[in-house]
Length: 172
Image (tube, helix red, strand yellow):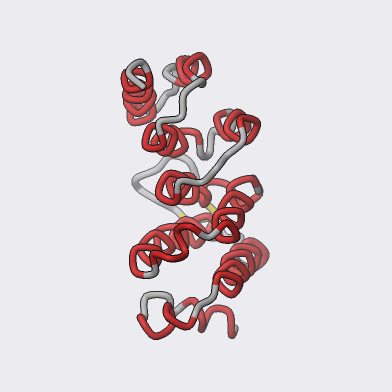
């Protein structure tokens, strides 16, 4: 429960200033694992036809909280440890749709992804739409063919993001 108490302070300046790269990295990993193990109920939503597990919602919210935290403590943006932690969460597909905000953090932090990582994420339906946003933000070229296949997605917003990527990548 100490873990959840720590997380409840994530927006407080005093708590943010007390964090080190290592303590934030550990908090991210520990929270994701805690929620995965202890929060497996399914959430009902009138906005989504795809069920979300409660842990996915918690992890998604953590990614958004991290985005806000990183605006307050900019030194973490350049932290290789924090970037590797975020990439590690994104690689862990057991966290499902909760990883979407972590895919967006890739662009926010200017994370250094390998081509193999990018290919893997572009094959992951839980996160590929959000990753395309980050790839466009980072001006990462070389994935036009894969993104053209994603344009056939059933989700309009993903088609739109894929089109934006393809339009922009032609000028990079």
